[in-house]
Image (tube, rainbow, N blue to C red):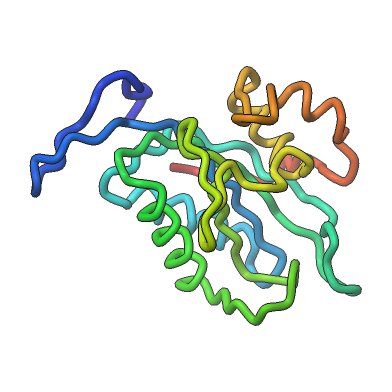
Amino acid sequence: MTETPNPHIVDADTITGEMRPIRRCVVALGSNMGERLQKLQGAVAALADTPGVFVTAVSSVYETEPVDAPAGSESFFNAVVLLDSTLPAHLLLDRALAIESAFGRERNGERNAPRPLDVDLIVVGKRKAHEEDLTLPHPRAHERAFVLVPWHEVEPDAEIPGQGPIADLLEKTGHGGVERREDLELHV
């Protein structure tokens, strides 16, 4: 798809006939285990293959230092994917978790542990959620350069609901520890 669907129209579900709004979504990808680029590319392909999801942009790949990770953690490859979707936020979350699992992610309870793939919902339209399994916008995205830098590359005028323009947030966090990898590229 070369054009972003109009966010003010609705798309009819082909099975139920239910009308759903098309929402702009931002998904952050990260990997610091194994074939990092391959895992990011697989996540992009899996998102693009999801019914009701239309990938509209993919950032460059950035190499980043781990944040609040256990000692000895390897650097991450990170990217941001913009998509338009008619799926409810909980279904998008289920899909993100399924993609992580398919690439070998096991949640062991250790916060910020090394992982083969991380697929985080950053924003789903202007939706706000504070539920046990879903928080929107992502609670730490506004202070994470590894999310803000690639997002700013593909959507410089974007805002995080309740936090402000990502350009302003990026000025606060800075670009430290985030390096664009000119030799690597993701494809839709």
